[in-house]
Structure formats: structure tokens, C-alpha cells
Amino acid sequence: MPPRIDLRSDTVTRPTPAMREAMARASVGDDVFEEDPTVNQLQELAAEMLGKEAGLFVSSGTQGNLVCLLAHCNRGDEVIMGHDSHTYNYEQVGSAVLGGIAPRIVQNQPDGTLRLEDIAAKIMPDNVHFGVTRLISLENTHNRRRGIYLAPAYTDAVAELAHSHGLSLHIDGARIFNAAVAQNVDVKALTRNADSVTFCLSKGLSAPVGSVVVGSAEFIRRARRARKVLGGGMRQAGVIAAAGIVALTEMVDRLAEDHANARRLAAGLARLPDVTPEPVYTDIVYFGVEHPRFNAQQLQEALSARGVGVLALGPKRIRAVTHYGIDADDINETLDILQEML
Image 1 (cartoon, rainbow, N blue to C red):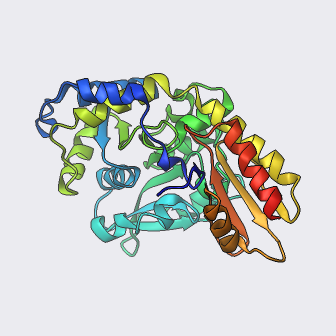
Image 2: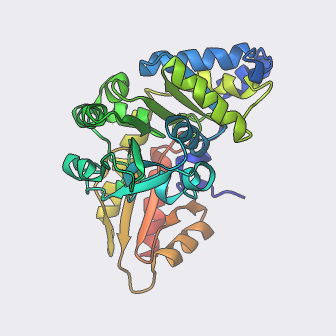
């Protein structure tokens, strides 16, 4: 059974009543034939919201990122990405395994950015000895950098650098709407100069499954082929796409509640002994544990026994993520339990 107060990730969200109703009533067709009206509606809505020509419904963020890399690059090409990026660390380096695409790694800065000069230094010259640099990949928000967001001006600068060298820019925007809400900007400001974007419906937006890739119509044509070869062609997928439409029309603005609850949690953690919360930017809270009786794993297990789920990420570091289904009372109860334990 999942924890009663589940802060392990925003992937544990459950579909809302409106989503369940929309799923039950969804019109469907064969999406491989591009005939599912609900999938088509979701893709068009996503593209419009992010300022792109077209969209593609995929099963997950990992599949979405891989589809994009396969659509941008050929075998032997290289993609520049951060050493702490999700694509590099948590997706089995699928681009290399399945696409023959080599990651060229740049150090992520504490704010999640890649320094422009570091990116430029990794762009390979046209030389028979080298692979061909084809793509730059950014992550917004950045998971391993405490859910910090990238600003529009920075993303624009990376896009300008990429395009000046004939490269494309991909954004792993699993939580791109968190980034937009946290900065009080239209999400288009974060994606306007990117050539492709992937975002998740099944994290803070609370849909039960799926992500969407957006880009130009020609790019999405190539992405659709990449999705098919990965086994990602879906048939009557409108039953799940319907939840994604509700996610985009009803669940974006409420992300601010998750951010407020994350700040509430961090403020409470700061008052506890032997616990040090890190800065909070969106819905992700990292905190250090220096306790005589608990390391991070032991504290995770003790909290689990009390019905609270968190995620130990090393011997002294824990992550908690707020989301739909977690309210202020849940945060207060979690803090009360921690106070009792520590």
C-alpha cells in the first residue's frame, strides 16, 4: 500500500474526478492512423499552449525525451547535456543504447544552468575525427537542482547559441508548468525559441499517464516515426488523452498550491533539530539529515512506518515532493511526526 501522506514524488498523483469523467466519456479512434479525436485535441491544445505548430502524445517523459533525440539526431551524432540531467542519469542513456547518439556532458551549475562558454567549448568542429554535434538539451525545472527553474532570458541565450552553430535546442520540460507558475510567466516564454519540448501530464498536472512532445510540424512528423519504432504507437488512446486535456485546462494554476506547501514544509523542517532544508523553488524539497539515531534511509523507513513517504537520496539527503492530494494539514502532520521522532 502507498503511504497515507505520499511525498516520494509528484508521479504518485491520482486523476481528479473530472479526469475520470472525461475518460469515461472520451471519443476514440485509432491514433496510429491519427484518427483519435481526443488525442488530436490534446496534441493541438498542448502545441498551442507552448507556442508550437504540432504535438505528439507519448506514454512517458522518458519516451518523449528519447523520441526527441532520435528525431533530431542521426547515429554517431552528439547531444550536449548536463551531468546532473534526468536524461543522462535516469533514462538508461537510451539515446546511446537505441539511437547511437553520444551524450557530451557539461557541468550543471548550482542554479541548474549550463554556462554558455562551457556549452560552446563542447561543440565539435567539422573534422573527420569527431562526432557531429547536433543538439543541446536543457532541463526545466531541474530535478537534481532542487526543482529550480530556468529563466526565459537564459533559455533564449542558449537557443541563440545553438542556432548560431546550426544546432537545435531540446527542453526536457517534465515540470515546465511548475517553472512558469513559479516565475509568473506564460509558459511560451520558456519555450519560444526551443525546437522541441517534452512535458509530463502525469506529475503535478495529475493525469494518470502520458507526456506530450511539441515542436514544428516537420519535427513532429519525424518524432511520430521515432515513437513508432520504439513501440509507442497507441490505438484508442483517447481514454487517457482525455485526462491530459483536463490536466492542461484545470490543473496548471493550482500548481501554486504545491509550491506554497513545499515552502511550508521547508519552513517547518528548518525548526527541527539535525535537519537542514535546502532552498525551495517549486514543488521539490531536499533536506539534509545529521542525526545521532537516523541516517536518511533510516528516517525514510521510520516515516514510512508512520504513513509518510519520502525518498532517501544518499546517506544524508532526503527528497519530498508536494502535489495534488497533499494539503496544508498533511504538511503539518508530517512535521508533527518528524518533531516527535527527532
